[in-house]
Length: 399
Image (cartoon, rainbow, N blue to C red; front, side, top):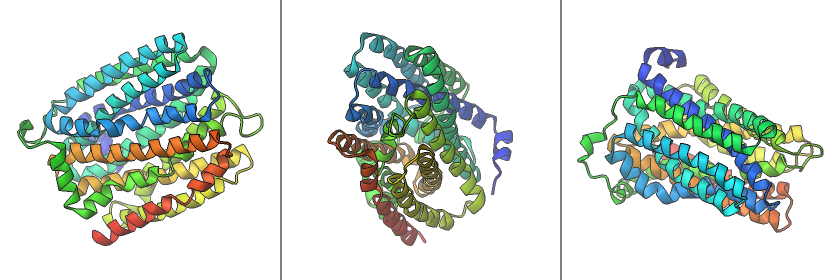
């Protein structure tokens, strides 16, 4: 099993790619707290708060039929540069929209940013197998997941603190700067032309046919979507950090909950691979067990009576999420023909975000309808068991 430090020290191109991801992810999470704070300053509706997460997820599904073929047809380095510069400009647009006090404007800017992210994320996933050797991929994918989780931990904490100290608009400006810096790292990458020089068939219908002719690959593509069935639990973090517990309300506590969840995900992405190794059979079994443990964790969160108990539950859910993210992503990459990487990764990301968007909307609707946030969590607690069944099917089919 390749050690993380060996990959890091031996591959300069990967290091540039890693730093580009690191900075852009940091900006994403930094501005998330500012965005929630901006919406909360205009309305007290729980549905309005959860619609932030919907705006950051639903457009990914809508853009997937365009994003996948683009990634498999266009130079991927060029796509990374375009999407980063575009998001930098949109981060500055947030300042003007917030100044005008427009709630629809905040959602519109979020949707536009998410559309670009819907292209950037599968693009990064498709670049990774091109810049690392096959035996290095599990370590590189785990480090990528750790980057997302680590920036969630740091970015959310910084976002909560900075938003409290210097205000929402400065957070948006800092976010714009992070995308410019990340584009600088991606600019130094070598060209990333698509497989076959872009002459292969790259339509989305062809990729759908490829996936659904292979039931085990189709099931593997949907594993992360099963994790998002209970995504409303994460959409309720602003409620848990916004006064559900006595004397625990405001950007600081919201940032703390996000950071604790991110810390769990960071540990989960790195530690479980070290513990279990890169054997596919162990990965598939671990994914199934993780879904069962998630159901238990959400049930405990629904009964938490203190803020620290909610923190522990969000930490555990992040830990398990990190395991599923790394192992499921590694298994999918190995199962799919590289000519279809961009489109299949776009399908995976799009279906995952669609599920997360619907789950978040339902959570916000139920809270606005009068249900306690913890009662909503209790309703969603059994949903990860769907993922357990699907993971068991993949394990049986691919043994």
